[in-house]
Length: 164
Ligand SMILES: *[C@@H]1O[C@H](CO)[C@@H](O)[C@H](O)[C@H]1NC(C)=O
Ligand SMILES: *[C@@H]1O[C@H](CO)[C@@H](O)[C@H](O)[C@H]1NC(C)=O
Ligand SMILES: *[C@@H]1O[C@H](CO)[C@@H](O)[C@H](O)[C@H]1NC(C)=O
Ligand SMILES: *[C@@H]1O[C@H](CO)[C@@H](O)[C@H](O)[C@H]1NC(C)=O
Image 1 (cartoon, rainbow, N blue to C red):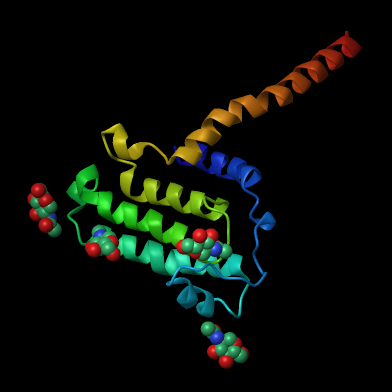
Image 2: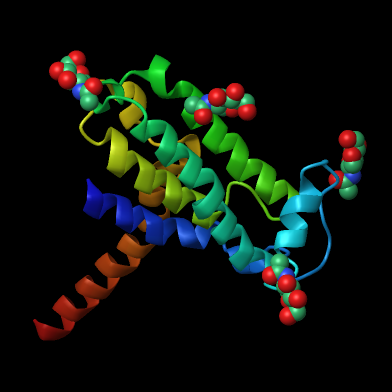
């Protein structure tokens, strides 16, 4: 699972190229919390700063919330829902403030990491299911591979012809 996830992580980086975001430009969302996030980010590119905030703010709070629960209930959707939603909202709010696209490649990889860390062993499908954008990538991957496979088949066929 880990291997396939990292493969899709690589694939996702093509879908969401963060380089096309507003990283490094000035501007700040107009929510009241944004002033705080933006002032924290004055000295670095917004994209770098976004990653710092997501890890040290959003992910940190999520880890604390999960650690405060008995790990036997990690697979209970009811019990982790609040922490999970807070984490999702946190990553989205910070992105809105820093005028970055959401979801983005970095957030995808953090979600995958959270799922492998906490929900890998869950027997129910509820939490093992990756977030929707990853499902999109899972669906898109075979579609995008088709042209590549056609080219491969054509090349293989040509090579075979030449050899025979
Ligand atoms: C600022 O906030 C208002 C209302 O909350 C919203 O309609 C507007 O689009 C926001 N502007 C920007 C630049 O985000
Ligand atoms: C940004 O850089 C200035 C000058 O180097 C420094 O005084 C300030 O504390 C820095 N701000 C943050 C949030 O790191
Ligand atoms: C977690 O729950 C299990 C079973 O419900 C229990 O045996 C264990 O002592 C609990 N651990 C903690 C740290 O509460
Ligand atoms: C989620 O956020 C709400 C509101 O900020 C807070 O009351 C709640 O304790 C948080 N839940 C977790 C699990 O951190």
